[in-house]
Amino acid sequence: LVALHRFESVKKYFHHGPALARAGPVELARQWEEVKEAFLETCDSGGWCRSSVADRLDKWVRAAESERLRKLEQWNAFHMASEDRDSRRMCRSLASREERCSGQIRALVARWWARESRRRVKEQEREARRDARSYEQDRRGAAARAAVERRAAAGEAA
Image (cartoon, rainbow, N blue to C red; front, side):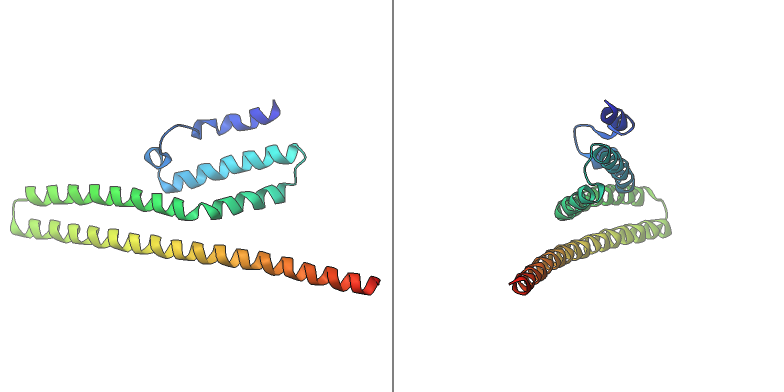
């Protein structure tokens, strides 16, 4: 019952449908931190090791990074296209040549910004993949060191 009460403050974030359609990336990150904290508090009060649960959550978050970045790219593309349409519409409605040129420059900047955003998302995906590989290598290295230490300890005991 206490656990359910902890989730009372964050249940408003649980809806059907795409989360990015309801809130932007910044708001979703803030909501995730609230939900995560409520979950960790519940696990902690249930007797689970908070740090190991947090580590598992972080691992799952890293595993879903590429999908999250893909959805963010789609969200960005949709909003950039919408801004582009608005910019073109405005450009057509402007009266003077100077105003049309100004609108064309804004449209050009919006397209450049969209392209730059896609490039940044791809770079973040590459970094996430590198981080995941590094995490896996660190985990394997730690396991190998532990095995060597166990063998050495077994050799000393004999």
